[in-house]
Length: 403
Ligand code: FAD
Ligand code: NAD
Image (cartoon, rainbow, N blue to C red):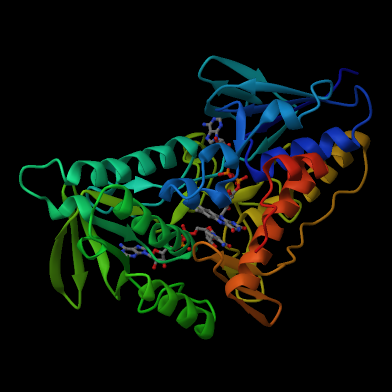
C-alpha cells in the first residue's frame, strides 16, 4: 500500500498546529505530510493590531515556517491555493497542483464587508503582515505630510476605525498610544488629531460584560478616542466615510479608514463548491466537511454551533488551536484504523488588550482589568508559542516582560 498523502492548506493557527502535532505523533513514513502557505512564514494574527498601529515591529509577529517544521516529516510548499477540486482530490496552486488522500483546510479569514459601498476599494483591513505594514506606513505618511502641505488638510489627521468588536478595540488601544508619539515626532498638536471608532451597536464590544466594557470605554476616551455608537458606516469613499445614525447621514472626511467590522471564511471554499455560510463550512462533530470523509476544516473556515445558545462559536485562534488536536488525532485514526473523536470546545476565557499595560478579560466568572489582564494576555501569547515551538520559540519571539 502506498503512503497516504495528507495536504494541509494554510499555516495559520489551525494549519500550523495540525502540522506540528502530526510531526510529533507520526511514525516514520506513516504519512506524507505537505503544508502549503502563501508565505514562508507563519504570523500571529492575534498580534496584528500592534504592527498595524506601529507599536510593535511586524517581524516580532512572524516565525519562519522552516524554524518550526521538521523537514524530515513535513514538506513545506510556498504557494497560493487557487481552488480545491474536491471530487478529483486535487488542489490547484498558483504554480502547480497537489493531489491528496486527506485534506486539512485552514485558510483562515477574509474581511466581511457586507456589500457596503466602497469599503473593499477604500478601507484598510487588519489581515496579514503585508496588510498591516501598509496601514502603519500609510498612517506615518499622513503625519509626515501634514506640515508639508501648503494648505493644512484635517483629513490627514482623521482616523476612522469601523467596528468596535475585539479587533477594532484592540487596534484603537494601540492607536491611542501611538498617536502621541507620532505627534511628538512630526511636531503636531495632539488636539488636531481625531481617532474615531464607529460601531453600529449601541455599545462597544457588544455582548461582553458591561463592567469590562465600561472600563475599556472610559480608558480609551481618556486617551482621546471618540466613539460614535449606534452608528453605521454606510459608504466608504476615497476621502472619508458616510455614516448613518437614526436615519441621519453624516459625512466625515478622512484619509484613513480601517475596517474591523467583521470576518468571513476564505472565499476559496465557496469558489471550490463547498456549501458555506459566510465562507465557513458547517463541519461534522469530527471536523470533517459534510459529504467528504477525507476533508477536515479547522480555524476560521470551520463553523461549529454552540448548542447551549444555538449560535456559532466566534472564530478565534483559541478554537483553531483546540481543533488542531482533534484534527491531527482523527487523521491518524483514519490512517491507522482507530476511532475518530468529536471536537468539544472548552473556552479558557477572553482577554482583549487596550494598549500598553492595559487590557480587560474574563476567565471563568472572574473579571480582569489593567496590568493583570495585560500580563494574562502576554501569558496566553507565550503559551501558544510554547505549544508551537517549545521554550526556545518563547525565548525568541515571546512577550517576556509581563508588566
Ligand atoms: P489564519 O490565522 O487566518 O491563517 C490562515 C493562513 O492561511 C495564513 O498563514 C495565510 O497566509 C494562509 N492563506 C490564506 N489564503 C491562502 C491561499 N490562498 N493560499 C495559501 N495560503 C493562504 N483570537 C483569539 O483567540 N484571541 C485573540 O486575542 C485574537 N486576537 C485577534 C486580533 C486581531 C487583530 C484579529 C484580526 C484576530 C484576532 N483573533 C483572536 C482571531 C484569530 O486571529 C483568528 O480566529 C485566527 O487567526 C484563525 O486562525 P486560522 O488558522 O483559521 O487562520
Ligand atoms: P466582530 O464581528 O466580532 O465585530 C465587528 C463589529 O463591527 C461588531 O461589533 C459590529 O456590530 C460592527 N459593525 C458591523 N458592521 C458595521 C457597520 N457597517 N458600521 C459600524 N459597525 C459595524 O469582528 P472582529 O472584531 O474582527 O473579530 C473577529 C473574530 O476575532 C471574533 O470572533 C473575535 O472574537 C475574534 N477576536 C478575538 C480577540 C480576543 O480574544 N482578544 C481579538 C480580536 C478578534
